[in-house]
Structures are given as C-alpha cells and as structure tokens.
Image 1 (cartoon, rainbow, N blue to C red):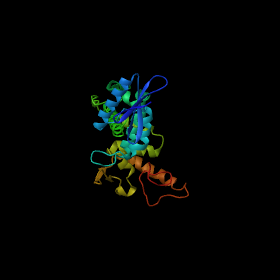
Image 2 (cartoon, helix red, strand yellow; image 1 turned 60 degrees about the vertical axis):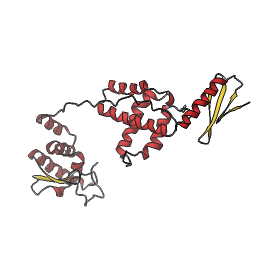
Image 3 (cartoon, one colour; image 1 turned 90 degrees about the horizontal axis):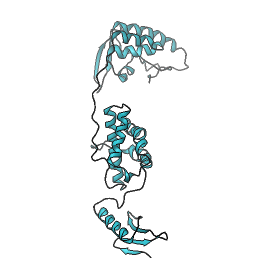
Image 4 (tube, rainbow, N blue to C red; image 1 turned 180 degrees about the horizontal axis):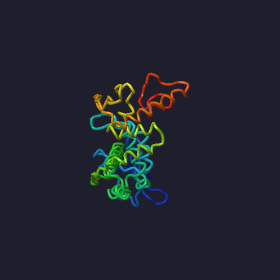
Length: 282
C-alpha cells in the first residue's frame, strides 16, 4: 500500500525494495531504495532539486543514445550566443567529433554517471592520437553544448565538465615547401587540369574558393594578371607568373577539346577550371 509523503508516495515491491514515486512534468517518475527511510530521503532530495529548478532525478539514458538524439534533433537548430544559427560546417564538425571521439569513451555510460575524469579521458585519447589542440578545443565546445542541452532537457542536474579546462592550442611550425618541391608536385599531378589547379594555388597564394571562382574573362589578354573576387567581395589583381601562364595555356587547349565531348556545355559559365560539362569545378 502506498504512503503519501508531500508531493510523492512510497510503496514496497514484492521483492522487498521500496519505490519513491513522484510526478514531474506531468510524468510519473520513480527511484528505488532498500528501506522506507531511504525512499523518504530520496523524495526529500527530489523536492529540493525540483524547487531549485533542476530535474528530480538524473536520467538513466546512456551517452550514446542521447548523443544520437542530440545530433539528429537538437544540433540542427543550435544557435550561438548572438542567436544566430550555427553554420552548417560547425554543426557537422560538432556532430563528427562527438561520434568519432566522445562516444568511443563515454558511449556506454549513463549521463548521470559521467564524471569530470571520464570527460578528461576523451581529451587524453585525442591527445594520444596526435590530434591538434584546436580540434580538441572544438570537441570541448561540442561536449559542453551537448551537456548544457541535456541539463535544459532536465536529464541532468550538474554538467560533468565544469572543471575540465579547454585544451590549449599548440602552435605548429609552418612547413614551407621549396621551389623544387612545388615544381615536383605540379609535375606529379595526374592531368593538366590538376597541374593548373596546383600551380594556380602555389604560384598566386589564392584560396581554393577564389581560384575555383575565377573565369577566363578575369585574365587580361596576355595572361599576365588575374582579377579575383576575394573575401568580403573585395576584388584584387594577382600577377600571373610565367610558370603558371604556361600551365594555363596548356589547360586551355585541353579544355577546348573537352568542350566537344558532352552533349551540353555551360557556355555562360566561362569558368577557368570547369567540370566535364563546363560548370564550376568542385
């Protein structure tokens, strides 16, 4: 027979265990105890947690299951502190780092059982794999956001990484290839389009997106300069080195032959580096 204790009740099961039961968010929840006294103490704790705006008892859901749900249902609408939707790249990176590195360590643990030491093991394993400090910092942000969302969903009362510092980013020395190495790389490319692509990046300093966005009309008549639309839609003119001009001349001949193969060619695109049907090369 159940006995009422304030906002909850207690009853004993046939196996001898006592059950502390209460209603939270229109759902009945329960916790097990070895004695009636322990069950009553649990109800007192539940009432205090609910009064403090926390969940009555931490959820028994495992990290792996919540991570799957979070990635599919919560992350797609995640926003930054200014209320702006996180970029698709950031959302994808957060989902990947959770799946590849956090689930491997924390997957079988219940959310409520995860400790700061468990979270630190995630970063220890990432460190052992030689992953960069900046990538580990991204993992820290992703985990912190996921645990905050779990707390908002009343699955946790305490976020288990409040004392886990974000990994420091270790600066890496820049590796600058020699001129001979650049020439060898260009020569080793599998086809003329790739040779032109590599030469274009190496001999101009352009970003990949800038080079892929260039058109033949952006070159002057003698192929001595290239006008590109840079970051922030700011145009600038880049000098074309003789070695790059030589690759461009060869590529233009190959591209002219490729135009004859498909049934349709994007005549309006006029892309410097084009796909097999003349559209922008990805």
